Image 1 (spheres, one colour):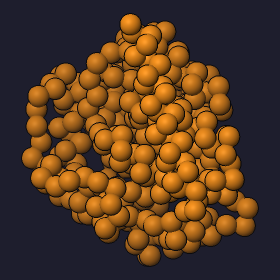
Image 2: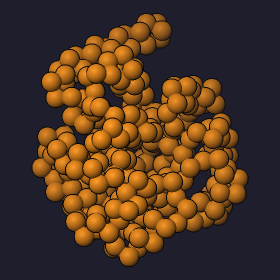
Image 3: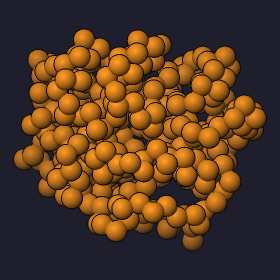
Image 4: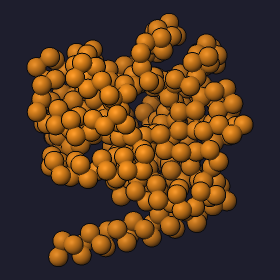
Amino acid sequence: MNGKKVYWHLPGFCYFRLLNQVIMNLMKDYPDKFRDGYCIGSVYGTFPGAIWNGGRAVFGITGKDDIKSVLKIYNSRGIPVRFTWTNSLLEEKHVYDTYCNLIMKLADNGMNQVLVNQPVLEEYICKNYPGFKRISSTTKRITGLKGLLEELEKDYYLVVLDYDLNHDERVLSAIQDKASKVEILVNEVCFPGCPKRTEHYRQQSQMQLEYDINTAFPCPNRTRERSFKECMDRPAFISNEQIGEYIDRGFVNFKIVGRGMPVEYVEESYLYFLVKDEHREFIRNKIDGLLNQFQQAMKQRKK
């Protein structure tokens, strides 16, 4: 690795808030037990009910004070919050949404980021919130080399590589001179080459826009156990040994998938990718103990 700093982008800044707080604290308190040079580059996700959100529909609502509180958890540690503004069905009328604009105004401090895939929203953000770093989303499904090279020439902070290209040597060689601008999903749970992936993104986008919580999608993943162990057998998975090779080639941004997954899956991903092998059980026990403390404290506050 030659002393390179490696940035990990973690899921669920809101949904996995407690787990992320624990992992941030442990990385600070026990740096020798985590892999050398690894740091948190951002935590991505959405506040519930934001219609700009895409990828996974998330329902609910978050009040203004709670939005501020969540932002402070990460920003006070120097960690950007990254919004998944990737709803693929957005029209101009949607960019004026009061709730989404409130979120952007509260987060507009020059530190935070947005994932984008629709020109209408991207142009609106560039004009009204230029302080946010823009990241080109994997939901664009750019699987051709020509399209990827063109995307890397655009004014994006990062471009998230489609997971089907994770091990494509022709592609990796062609983009190596832009490696620092590429973000790679290391533990994607979806099927390789899934023909329904774009359709699934659109369906999730429609659910988010219409607050349609009960619509199901005929995804083959629903018929299988989605565990981290099972994910490791997927063709797109990148092992720790392989990650070292990517880092040596200049790729230093890695994304851990986890939105819509159980907290156990995300915890196992953190333990595998971020923690040194010999300290994994120590950190696991710390995580589980601290999560239990947090949960007990929250129960006491509700009484």
